[in-house]
Image (cartoon, each protein chain N blue to C red):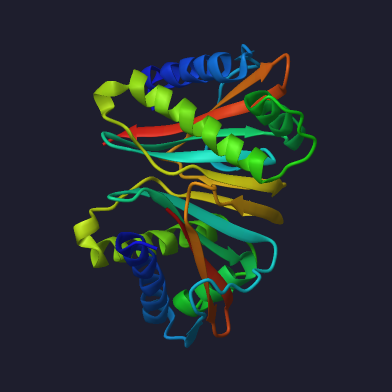
Length: 152
Length: 154
């Protein structure tokens, strides 16, 4: 893995960890690079493309239940259904993480494409043979598993 | 999103299918504008667009159509979704988006990395400010597919 690829990956993972810790104050267990936990279905996949010295995509995956619990912790309001507010919340979380990653790696001058949010019972995201894919899962206490995956 | 963004994307799709697959796609219904929550197809390739626009292009189709389409691309028979099919879908959207970017040269469009998703019963969420334009298309040889675009000038 070259230095830029590693720095981009680290920036997104660090940003997720710091952003969620700061939003919720909850303990977060970060698995080592390449280790992932299954995300319970149905789940969200938020895909954001980026372009800089390296082009790629960052995918944030989390179950619907985990994001509901995360926002209950963040906003102090319980919600048990996926509605426009929750979806906005998911997109906002991705936006916060991406913005923080970009700020960490300013020399890479990352430009982001609009995020796409996919909600599905079953989905496989495919890493092209031409790309390097790496993922790490985070276990956010009382919320569940969140996985950050980067393809470059 | 303007018509001058959409037509080059349709032309790019037709050109790519003609050149790479030896098949001529035709429109298969009216354009649809989608915002909010909407269902999308089983197998889809998406690619981000940057430059003087921010947006994305997507190609989506059912699994059997994906197998036939990539089979035509690779000139071999494929009967089930595998890594080659998913790579092929990523490559096709990459070529289509590259051709569209060339036709929209004034916007100096840069392409992201294609992402390919396969599964069942996907739903996509779109911001009210970034509607997706869905273009239904089909070929006699492979079947129905959709090309979709969201694009805003920056």
